Length: 506
Image (cartoon, rainbow, N blue to C red):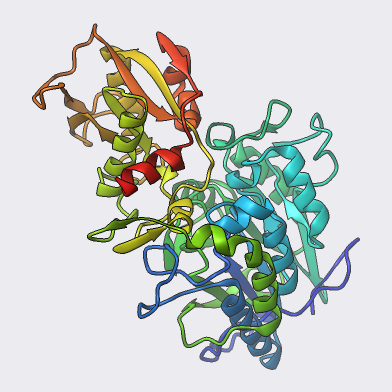
């Protein structure tokens, strides 16, 4: 069992049966790290697209199934004589009606039953502002971490977060450092009083402080994204493992990066509770990893549901049933969201077109990251739609010069070839690009659809009426031009979900 100073004794953590590790004469301590990330309120099983699971199709995840897998992992670790830790790398919030209705308290109840031992904040933990996050913090019994955040000027959160936590077994410590994307102010709603700092500097400081107290194994519990995790691994001395999130990537087997003074292992368990990650580590007396083995387990339908967690989910689901069962339309084929971070997608075009029509604009503009799931073929319920669009955004409209629209397109394409939530999903506007060109010079052509259906080149001087969601209109996802360069702007359009519901019903 691990223990931690100033906190109650911890539960031992599970894993799945794995082949025995190679014996190591140097190994002094054996531990298992259990990890998931980007759960996004998916308390009920999901389809492969992350939409709600339908009868007759393969289902994955769900809080009760994950609970069983965690229990099995803990028992496997215990039987092998291993201490264990259950760690989550952010974005527990947002993505289903459970969060819309209960504002984080359903997630808190499930995490408590799972036995989470440390959790780092993701950007979506700030979606409802500091006060709602504070209510969640009051409901969980485990430490919530972030080393690169200053909340001293935010009364709701001051004193309620920790940068690190140290777990002890015998003479060895496992030090967990929490890191959150510094892009949070443009991705969420943390308010004006919270300051996000450079994660590299924060991690460097935390690792130095951890190691000056003696031998330790350092784990970065990161909600920065895979690219940032690779940079941290290469640039910071003294890091052993990075358990990541934010990119929704399945990183298994783990990536091994040559660090400043040791190899660094990086893993990520995709998203939405579809996978649970387990690392078995044999640690030398100085805390370095002597040997390791990973088993990434898919949360498939053959895993039984834990009755206690199933009861919790059922209790929180009760007020949602009538709402989400209401049928609002039909689709002849499924619309997936999985490519919407990298390229134009049919789902994104449908949402953008619904916004365009809702306010009689010339152009509709949706961010790929705002599409949180796909839509199935056949009947579409309101619950399905609100799983795709869980943010409660309204439709905004603004007048933009063609030069501003082109610059905004460049922002939307700036993260390529990596996927990004800012990728533009459009209606009434199309473009060509060359992703090999420098950032800011990637758009090779842009055209706007005229009222007669013809396409004409984007006119740099013309002012176009553009519909978007209010998050982007206020400058979210790096679209500061929408807030600063609009000739006129209004955020008082209908709810985005209502606009898409009308489009589906029509």
